[in-house]
Image (cartoon, rainbow, N blue to C red; front, side, top):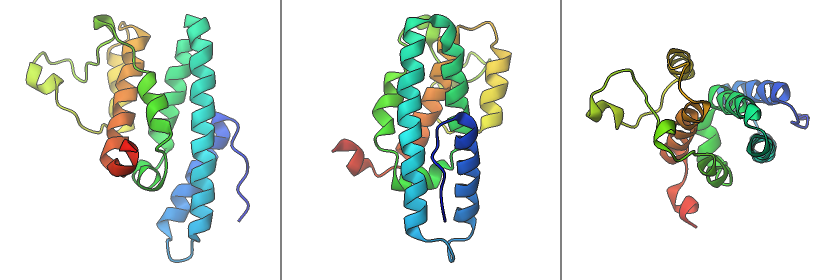
Length: 166
């Protein structure tokens, strides 16, 4: 199976759909094909996150592009398999996207119960979208942190932690 090079967000979505389809039929899918797909997706994610983050550092208006890319990754990537077998090089890049400031803190809910606000769990893409829409007046950096935290939680839950520490 020939896997196209992933250079755009649209190609990323297309390849992740192929990846999900192959995961549904493990008996006929070659592990080398899955490995090739994981490598292409990981390369794209690494390059795009660095590129978009660099552009956003120079121009605050580009922060919306960074948020869009993170949401696409969070929504389309089959994270259970991907982070179980690959993706370790993405962790530090995603971690570095965190904004540190009280105005940029992550608020997962509109509730003020401090116990609830500190709970860490993987949110589905629809929850992320609803929170971002509900908190429209929050700085975009806080919205980016919400998606970054969700991606990091997925990574930590599904990756080989021993390899992550190396």
